[in-house]
Amino acid sequence: MNKHRVVITGLGCISALGLDLNAFWHRLIAGESGISDIKNVSCEDLRFKNGAEVADYDENKYFERSELSWMDRFAQFALIAASEAIADAKLSAMDINGTDTAVITGACLGGRQTEDTGYYRVYRENKKTVAPNIIPNTMINAGASHISTKFGITGPVFTFSTACSSSSHAIGHAFWMIRNGMVNRAITGGSEAPFCFAMLKAWDALRVVTSGICRPFSKNRNGMVLGEGGAMLVLESLSSALERNAKIYAEITGFGMSSDAGHITNPSSAGQLLAMQSALNDAAIAPSSIQYINAHGTGTIMNDQIETQSIRAFFPSAHDHLLVSSTKAAHGHLLGATGAIEAIATILAIKNAMVPPTINFMEKDNECDLPMVVNQAVSHDINYALSSSFAFGGLNAILLFKKYDGRYAN
Image 1 (cartoon, rainbow, N blue to C red):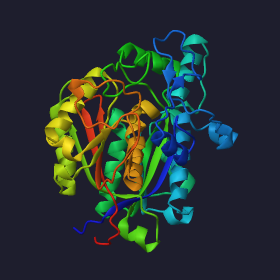
Image 2: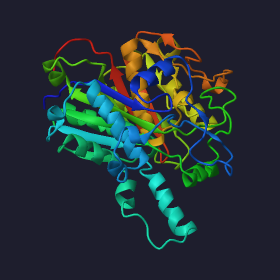
Image 3: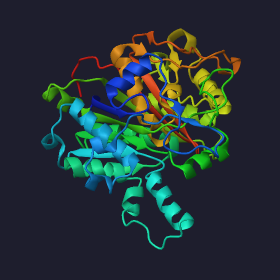
């Protein structure tokens, strides 16, 4: 089978770092954080009070009231990010409608704000009825379906729900579908909106969310911080991109995935290594070719230590050719959407030859001995880069991006 090269021609993002892609990138590179006190939910009974909320967001500026009644906050973020990515790719609705475009998204929570409101009405207020839109608003595939509906996309439309690897799985499968000629382009990524009281209480019970500052890989780290938002990419066959003289951010050349088949919450280095090897095998390159890894880097003690073990085992000469950073201390952990927002960070790092920093880093942990980029961005030419997602359930996904070389060859 003739395999097509696949490139990224559009990006869109709404996050705690800003309402669009430009704000996200500039604040990320500046070493700024979007994490602050949670404002949209009362945290009086919670151990932690901070989160990466989308600030200054007014849903009425994006949607009509009639639309909002059928769209949970997570689906709004999906559609906003997808619309920006499609406009960034300079694609019209006529270009993408029909069966030759796919919409493949990732989310692990779905419409929890709608669900939370419904439960409150039933169990706290003892109401006999609930709103008729609860089911369609809580569907995990709602974001994908709204994108499909708005742009008339009748090709494959579906959603992955694999915890914190959801949107990386979505992007990887979109890549494979285009490479194998099943579709010509895809709108892919993820969205999440976890800031409702019941969900925050559930995360509080896990004791993995810090009550202080998120410090990935730093010696004094003590947990992650939840985030919300949406991140979407336009993937396209290289031949299609060249035919319409599209701007090309980067090329996607490999995707790998694995399962730890172990503990439901504790990560396994062996499983992570399998996913890394699978991604590099898919791209037919050696570990020494990688110059940058956007690490999963949650800021929890165990996760960062296990990920370090994996990187050191797979890249024994890491300090000679590799830079590593985690961007979660800036935009928060977006759960099912985190793979997509970190993929965008990785793609822009390649495009701009600039590695975003791991902020809030205070002291090196000998258990996390990696060539880290800390607190300030670093100029660095990147040919190949990985974006890593390691999820609860032991579900691992690795995306491999490459600088576009300007050549045309299928």
